[in-house]
Length: 111
Length: 114
Image (cartoon, rainbow over all chains, first blue to last red; front, side):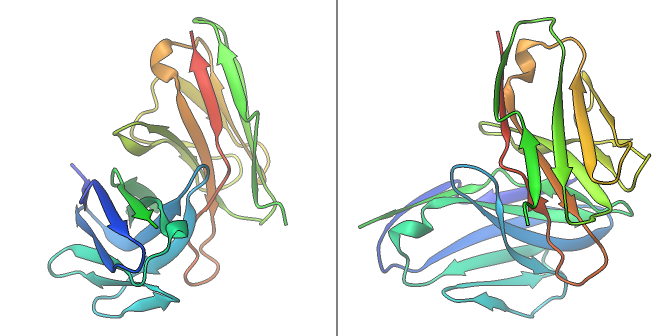
C-alpha cells in the first residue's frame, strides 16, 4: 500500500527559528514529490521535486529530495508568524499522476 | 485568471438527500481530481479524470459519482448522502504541458450531512 508519512505532526516555534519538516514515502511508480502550504482554505503549491540532491529554493523556504532513502525535507529559515500553516507533502505516482498525501505538519510560529 | 472555482462553498444536507458539487477551471488543464479532507486523515482521492469524457476511481470512491462532459468542468455527485460524507471537498487540476506543473486547488466545499 502506498504510504506518505510526515513528521512531526505538529511543531511550535518562535519567530526567527529555523524549522525542518520531514516527509518519507513508500509508493509504486514514483514520479515526483510536492510540498504545499495550507492555511485556512486551498493548499498552495510550494515545490515540485523530481530529481535527487537538487535543492529547490524560494526565499526562506527550501526543499530537497533523496530518492535513494525515499524522503524529502522542507526547511524554513527565519520563521515569521505568517508561516503558520499546515504543510502538506504529496507524492505523485503512476501512469495517471495520482497524488498520495501525508497527514501534514501543523506549524505554529509564535511572536 | 480565476484558476479553479468550486461551488457551492458550504452546504448542509439531510441524510439521503442528493447533491452535485461543481468544479470549473479556466487553465485548459487535462487532469482534474476530487479530494476529501478529514481531520487526521489528510487529503484522499475520490475520483479523477485524465481528459474530457474520462473518469476513474481513486482511493475512496464509494458513495460518489463523477462526470466530465466538458474539459473545464468536473462534477462530483452524492446520490444518497450519509453522515460519513461530512467533509471538506477539494477539486484540483493539473497539466503535463510544462515542467514544474504542480496542481492548482479550488478553495473547497464544506459539506455537512445531518
